[in-house]
Length: 401
Image (cartoon, rainbow, N blue to C red; front, side, top):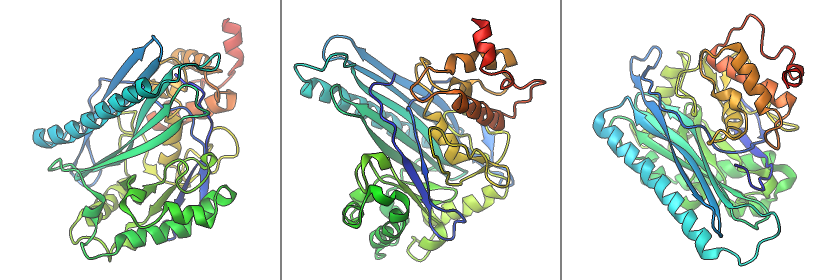
């Protein structure tokens, strides 16, 4: 599913008061597997229902020139009221359908007459991650990797959809703040203070200032999370392509004076405080079951390839790391870290077979990455095997041949 995909660096920075520091993350391929399971969950200690999810997929192929390939995985929300689910899902489907239609139209409209030898089709790959799932808030991010045949590299775009889980209404960024509050100025200032430490030599003051001018378009990719308001900056917006899509997380306490009274920020802060005392166990898409352990958010540092910080210091699963690893799972099952897709009780023989198939199936898959992915899956699902599938790997792959 990957056509001329270029490795990029994504940064996440939590501002002071969050207990975390700046770091860089390395994403890989995007796309996740479709699923048809439905899970209804209860938030620990709160008694409120979490939303459940069913994963759906949109695929399209055009073999004639100009050729294209579309693979988008998206969630349908369950476990909320029928009216809320209807409104939320209609918004998600409308976005996905519109994204696919726009891509296909653009391919046909701008297709070059001649392409370099060996050029593959234009490609649109969509993946999904959980940002917040509580009794009152459902927030998901939909990432689209778009590559047009003949281009030097593709572009990744993040769209975040934040909903009131009770009414099904979609929040706008302006809904979070008092009408008279200078919230754009506050977001701009917070971002400008954080980003230089994050992107380093991949940017400069002029570039960062230009991409963080106090205008809504510069902060369009935002999300409510259990850890604060997350702002994602697009490719080239504040730094070079190698910087990926930097993220800044602003703790809710820093926004309290600007927030609308009783609005989404107050709601998110209250829900997060109740849930994280639980511990928090949101279903982390593309998995739709709860993790066996609690969750945390900690920036991670990656020197090469895949991230290694799978847990926070208290042993909870690092949501940041999970989101990055799942970007290596292909939607059509043709390659990637499929060891992450095996569910709660796979036979050890199945885990070994999938790890062998994963090995070398993608441009960034190697022994170390596969071992880390198996460990992450084991943490998430609580796998317990008499003998770990990692013992003897990858030697047993060669013996099996």
